[in-house]
Image (tube, rainbow, N blue to C red; front, top):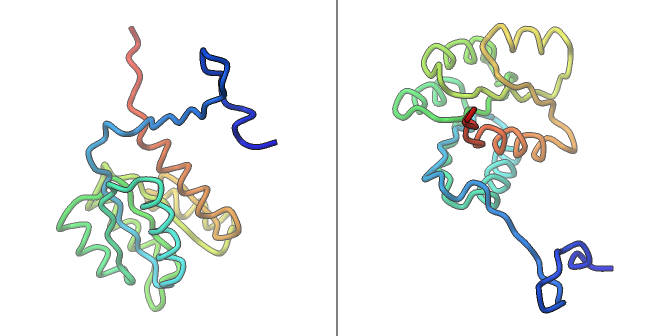
Length: 154
């Protein structure tokens, strides 16, 4: 059975696939990736570009470079690995939160410990994601959730 088995029936009785692009109206999402590990950064970049071809995506491989890029143009979403070589990622997170208070800050780490989650929240993180098999999917879901426009209470 193929994917078309789940598609709604067309009026003439033929199956058709229905694709819904919920976020086409958003002109450009601006995302900053800060991670020293190039292969992970490239994989996340490729995932986001595949989902959102018009995305404006900037990369940094260090905290100071990420802070500089964030100060040049405020991103909507910042993905930050808190384990940057020779740097305190939580300090960078705190500084990014002060610099870009309206940005969503996704903390990414290979250490899913409760104390890291707590420290990340205290540093201003809006989301916490552990590196693992589902990391890219988890981040994509957060980005999609961040793009849903607020509903009118009417």
